[in-house]
Image (cartoon, rainbow, N blue to C red; front, side, top):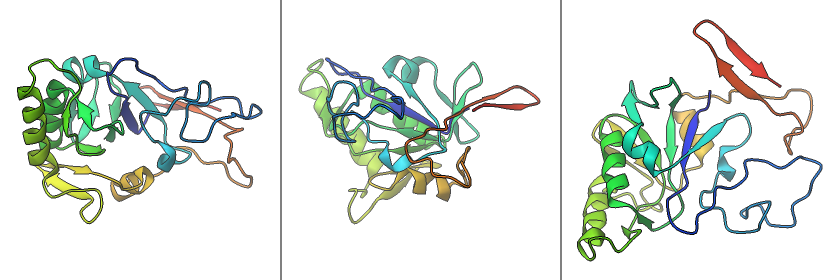
Length: 203
């Protein structure tokens, strides 16, 4: 069970950052860098905070497996997410952007910056023009500054709003909290699984 799915992009070379390192190990890199190698993280999840789990997805999953059911982004094996987070990049595959537009129109919520161009030269320069036209339609007046959300179809896109705030507005509260003690470095962590009749937490 996870509240968020994170698309980390499909550029080369690519980086799927580590979800965590043991709390006793101090990274020599800043928080916005991968704690293992120091490369910039493609997606900033700092505003998600503790208690909301996430999964990474790639282009193949978006194009072939992900769909919208009851406002959630669902996979055939039963996983469902309330929010899709895009990478902090100005480029994206036109095919992925078309699919993301379909998700939002069908009721999904997507967080991320407005893309400006294609992430490859396939079909250049038409690919860049297609990305710009699609993004203008999906993001509308949303610029991440004066306008930070935009309705598109029955869903919406948000840009530069803390992820925890986006989830709270959707009525999604943290799935796991540590009480009566600090847990800033996630010394206490969890995995949430669910069956048809039970919720199971590994703590």
